[in-house]
Length: 308
Image (cartoon, rainbow, N blue to C red; front, top):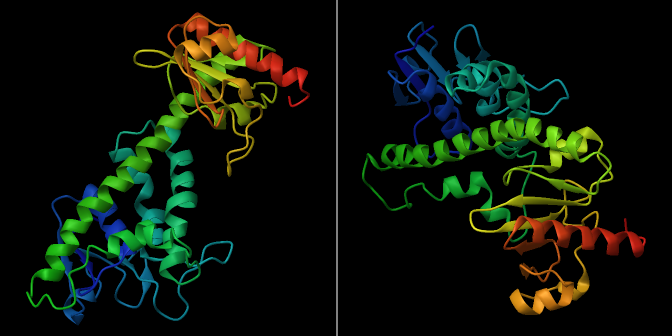
């Protein structure tokens, strides 16, 4: 079905129908968004897709609501919002339209569902309530700040704000998809570099790229540092132990912390060493040779101290 209309509710907006609109407008750019609760619009028809309104979930009929009794649940019992439903049914087509290689679509679809769609679903259904200082900085909260203020009496204010927020939401979806696709492209490069490294503790990459997922997938637990070129210098960086937190498999030497240029060269004995972060997770050098030498020194210290 190629719809003429994409129908969602009028009034205040939330992340789930905004993000649903991102997916649907990419697939059906000729369709007009209609924001209404009128029965003539929220009744299924051959010319429309209805989402986040209408009181029913029937993919064949083109209606994707989640507010009704008996609302759809994921296989693990967690609730859907309209966004999760739209992603379930249209996400694969969206990724194909975005130009992803066919062999990457399923992996990116699953990753995006788990890391992006599911948190939106849980938040919209009240099953997840981000709290603390960062609670107001989640994507759903930030998108809602784009709503009109309460005393804006312009009858077009809600629709105008919706379309402005839609552009913002689109940028986040597209960026997330691009990053996920890039990780898969990087995986092949990192895997080749791991094979080339063998039992060495320092992994050299041809450029900066996401490396930890591929290192974990390959079971390369022996690796301690990664070296790669940047625009004007070379980078030495540690490898985090887990997905959360900042603990590294090995820190850079404490004697290097916070030093730059001549002071760092004197501390490590490597000509061309230019920077070491005070947190000891990243360092820089002016040449490849200097970066590799710094990395090997860091490996030696980590091994000698029994921390690796």
